[in-house]
Image 1 (cartoon, helix red, strand yellow):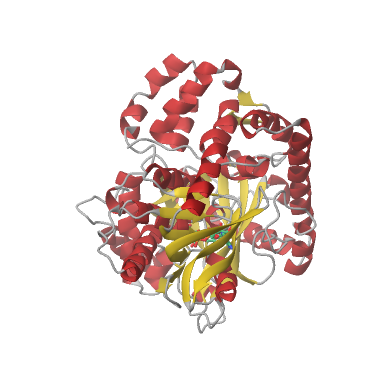
Image 2 (cartoon, rainbow, N blue to C red; image 1 turned 120 degrees about the vertical axis):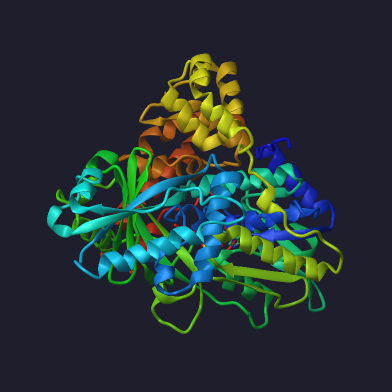
Length: 571
Ligand SMILES: Cc1cc2nc3c(=O)[nH]c(=O)nc-3n(C[C@H](O)[C@H](O)[C@H](O)COP(=O)(O)OP(=O)(O)OC[C@H]3O[C@@H](n4cnc5c(N)ncnc54)[C@H](O)[C@@H]3O)c2cc1C
């Protein structure tokens, strides 16, 4: 299977293709669920289009805890089927579908009670580990082990001795959520899907009650086009109710949003060789290793303000700091925080008022002929959601459609990854890059690293790191625009790389250099370079100011003060 680029020319071609023919399926929303639906449908031989109003994965799918997990706390809620399904997905993603993007990560579960707690948590972890075996696969991660306090302190010297009595270590998996979505869309495009970002669905085409397609606004060109499709799949997460309002009539699915905030701190601020999971009064808090950083989160509070840019307030940040500091011997302060991000969980509206008790399971609905709605779920189980949505599409198409085969479709860059990983010292010698750099590239691109290295060989000026964000090479910025669908500076600094949360300057110090690198492939003149830098800088300023506010309302009002580089239609 060849690889596909998602550059500017490919976007134009995709929109032209979508306008020119009646598709089997058009997918609304380019988060993990929409991307999964596009790949599932394309690999079943259907003609597919996907439109995303903003950047790919710019909604919830770049703002998660970045864990591929069964969810220990669902076990406590006795939701075994959900845990089993998620752990089977974890095994599949780790070992077959995306070994370059998904990797095992250890967590320490500190015990705070003597007596009952160790057998209780230990039994849960025996179950958790055994539910992970499936498909003839191993679980893909090591099993849990019991630790005395002394041994736990050796693994996590940063923990305060008096904060716990002993610990259990277990393993889960983590993913670069934004890159995973983009890689899945590249894979779907390689199988023939037409994919376009900054393309918003603003209405539906109807024949009587039946939905026969969507009206799409190309937000870059300011033009509208009609995309005819035999089935439309709505995968817009927390925007589901807005789409239902466009369709009219009574909606069958209601989605509400719950905000989760994460902090990023440098790795050296917490001396530990393992991640940590802590119980909180409502849920759990993770301290997750993330390259040269830790991601710490999350919160869980009702949110009904702006959905595209949920703002983190001072109270959110203090909540996370207070909880993590309860177990650290040297507390973190606000000055240790490099990055902050907030995301919205798309929760199926249920009976309970407490958002953390609402189900994470998904539903598929067929409110009117021609339209399939899919919502809920979690990142880990996107493939199952996508399969169920395309099964509903197949039903609506009234033709024989083969069953889902995405359990056997490796994502772009997976094929050959292990061999290249084993050859990383040779790659380092041949390219002149340090082996640590090659490892970083392999974990971002898998076997597509060859394309990045070819770019560097052709343009040696791109071989060096960005000054101010030296985890990333200049070539990666260019490649993000030519191959990975990035169209604006923000896309590159926030989602193709994570410079916006991994540096104290939050990307501002590299904005000019990155914008100049993007100018060639995206055909920007000096005026556009200036505009991109200004918009990015204003966004960071607004986020910083919103994080000083006490309430959600104040934080939201300030965040909304920063303009959008490509406003969506309702702005
Ligand atoms: C704080 C937090 C932590 C989480 N941690 C985890 C975790 O560790 N593991 C896990 O498995 N899950 C986790 N989740 C859940 C998981 O991230 C989500 O379930 C998942 O990302 C939702 O994906 P989605 O595709 O449904 O929505 P989204 O990613 O939000 O995608 C919907 C897309 O639709 C687009 N859209 C909206 N309206 C239109 C329109 N009119 N036209 C075109 N496009 C439109 C939006 O721009 C958006 O990109 C977490 C969630 C949060 C908030």
